Image 1 (cartoon, rainbow, N blue to C red):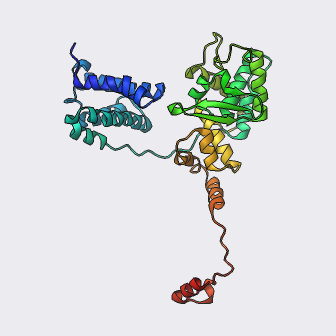
Image 2: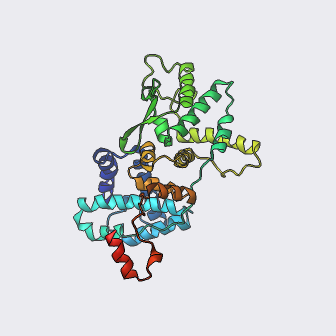
Image 3: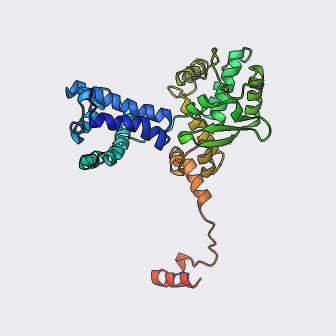
Length: 341
């Protein structure tokens, strides 16, 4: 079967450019792949163009806009998901226009499709009390309960993304003081996270019980299921959801989020650090954010946190030599006096 120009470029983009030249994570590649799977399905169902017949001639600005509208109207995706799909398309056409100069003009028009603004939502998180309720739920008289407690405590204390926890190996845990965990984040960037004494104790007991400190286990996943395989995202989500449902049943009067997803523990860690007065730069490094701008979203959550952060950043001004406004109502005279101070 003869490949179209679109098929050749998309294949090189997903199999060579993203993994080998950009060193993009497998999860990101999967997300981008899913975008184009949906686009191909849209073209076949709505435009009657079979996937093997799609060329750059049919992938136009109008078809991309129609695809985004189809996602929202027919697939009922959120604005965030719609924007993620558009980001993947933008990334592809930045690559495609250099590989196929003849589509440069159409690529520029596609790259000009704007992201949709969305309403800023509050950051779902757990308070310190709610977090304590969650950690109370596992039955620590059982081996599985002790494992689940260790998993949740590490997920929170390390501020880890769920994939970072899944990828965590025994050799990346240091129990000797200072106790640390080495996480591998986006772009295969590693960062060392200090863990608290209580977390270290729970983790050491878990590793000892499961013989993970023995020779030959260094490359084993730190947390594994009954088949000794690393957990999957649905597996970790299931564990959190199970204990969160128990919290809801036990604390009926407590105002709790509707659902608990793994990333909520990362949000909770960030907000708890902010409330404790930890500098945003340190929080950025702990969470593995590329830019402090990403970390600043937590400041938007609470007015009191913003006020404290602004006060901490406000320079100390010595006003002893500055003339009082009330001394002279003539603004020009007041400014002259100010310059002489």
